[in-house]
Image (cartoon, rainbow, N blue to C red):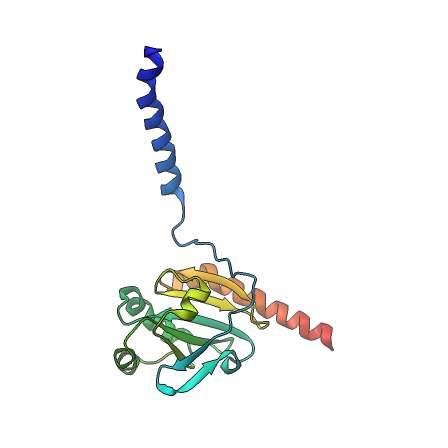
Length: 186
């Protein structure tokens, strides 16, 4: 009996070591999204640049869309912003912003100072759309296909390396699907 009691700390230590090893091996960028493969949620928010204008799903263009959740209080958002400005010239998709739990005046000033890459930004001051999307924090970027289905959720800074490795192959795949659907419809 004394031997078993003496082994308990060793067993607990080994179990904690296994749990720590498992936790350290997980990719923090790869957070599951319950909405991947599901329709983009319905929303009704004011436009960041015009609090009188209401934006809904009807204001989203057809085709491939990127929704970027951002805020002025987010250091990662400032870091990724120049790359988003660069991406905004790509005609294969439309880039939308979701300004998350921010100050409207500060956010508008930010876009004036650093250039506005978005077709429009929705002002999500209460975090309603972000909550519906399962956002943990900013920045997060969602790829939404031509059928308004969420195909990818990325938590973290979007830069050229991440774009090449994770986003571009998916954009190409969706373009191929769109071409196949178009050809089948003719």
